[in-house]
Image (cartoon, rainbow, N blue to C red; front, side, top):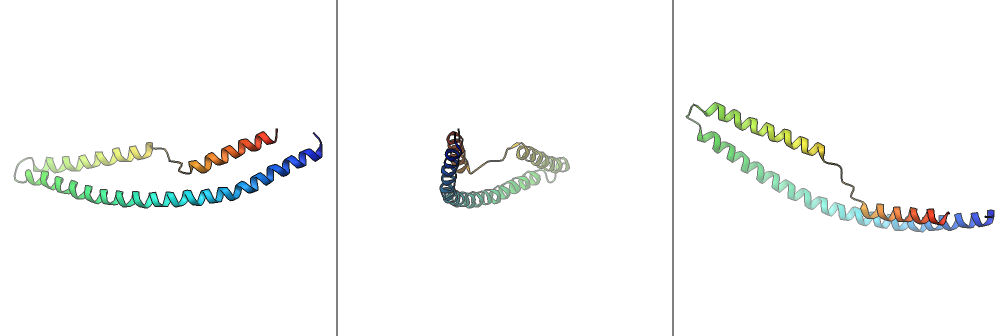
Length: 124
């Protein structure tokens, strides 16, 4: 290949990359807006679930403890409720640690991967 054809080839590739850069920025802004909407909806739902769940569980725990109020089992039941919460907290922490992070910009990543493949093919 001559130098002129190499320069022309690289010029075509650079024009392609510059044109795609505008598309990437538009796609990124669309995906960020979608992620923001989804995040707000998920956070509101999780907060409502957490508040309702905590109220429910606290009343259940109070009911369990109150059921054993004047019995010899009162102190063991109180410690059993506390131990149950400790075990639940440890399990939740382990589950959280074992989850892998989620990559949410899949569409943008796919477009960039396709364009890199196109550029590699053009430079052969």
